[in-house]
Image 1 (cartoon, rainbow, N blue to C red):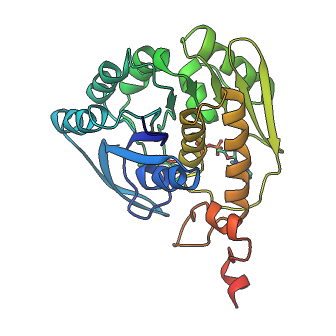
Image 2 (tube, rainbow, N blue to C red; image 1 turned 90 degrees about the horizontal axis):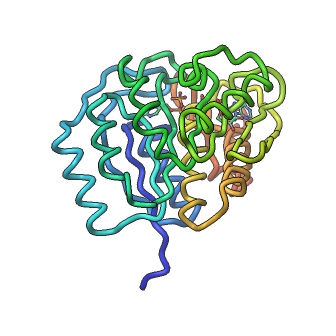
Image 3 (cartoon, rainbow, N blue to C red; image 1 turned 135 degrees about the vertical axis):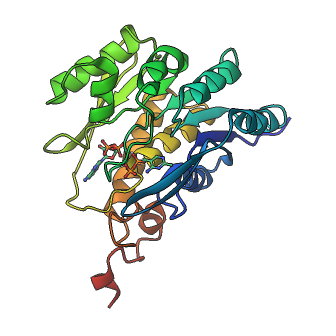
Amino acid sequence: MSNIKSALTIAGTDPTGGAGIQADLKVFQEREVYGMSVITSVVAQNTLGVQEVQHLSIDFIEKQLDAVLKDIPPQGIKTGMIATVDMMKLIARKIANTNIPYVIDPVMVAKSGDSLMEEESRRVIRDVLIPLATVVTPNVPEAEILVDFAIKDQEDAKKAAKVIVDDLGAQAAVVKGGHLQGEAIDVLYDGGEYYYFKDARFDTKHTHGTGCTFSAVITAELAKGKLIKDAVAIGKEYITDAIQYSLELGKGNGPTNHWGYRLKGVPNHEEDME
Ligand SMILES: Nc1ncnc2c1ncn2[C@@H]1O[C@H](COP(=O)(O)OP(=O)(O)O)[C@@H](O)[C@H]1O
Ligand SMILES: Cc1ncc(COP(=O)(O)OP(=O)(O)O)c(N)n1
């Protein structure tokens, strides 16, 4: 039996490489798991926003899923952009009963404000996919939609994480604090305890793909057999470093850059390159 751990991302694309499938695969490589992908939607987007989306057919998404799952069953799965109700139902059918750790990044709206999920799918992700999740990783606006109350501070974030676990049926939920004020604090609830992951907030607009990157690290670590709280701790440290070294690439919100952190000497902003 091979010792190699593999992880699968089921998501949409970002041709500029900062978010979606491309970001996930970079993370899997850096976290030393074998990365695999199933594409749900092809997205024409860049650091400025989303220009156009083309969904793949359900039949073709199913063919991709079967190709991977029947050949190289992964030790961790994550879903990102799943735009339609039919895609959600298909994915639920394929991964229910697999026992593979499953991370849901409930991607609804990109930082640019562009919608990445149909309105009706918001109810279906809650009812059909979240009960299958090992960890759900909503940002504040996504958590507000899932739990149906406003999240203004950390106390509200804590309540939301509890609702996602106790009422919606996930094993654990981490409500990310990037959209709140002050330090960047994420709250994890695992059905028993709360854990707080706190780090510096960087004053930068170059945060394209933070949510994708964070959830991909958690997926990779779960695939390696880490406990949920340890996987989230590694995800938090990774994303903090990647935001600190984010790249001033493109004309809008540049991507995060963990590779720059690892190499330390790699400059992150143009003025540093002079
Ligand atoms: N400016 C920032 N500085 C440091 N950490 C941040 C910053 N913005 C977000 N984070 C962290 O990045 C991760 C993603 O957060 P968030 O922005 O809330 O999600 P999303 O990218 O899905 O909107 C979380 O761990 C959050 O605490
Ligand atoms: C294909 C695709 N999936 C997800 C996102 C959203 O990514 P996220 O990590 O939330 O970062 P922003 O794009 O919101 O900065 C995406 N843009 N594209």
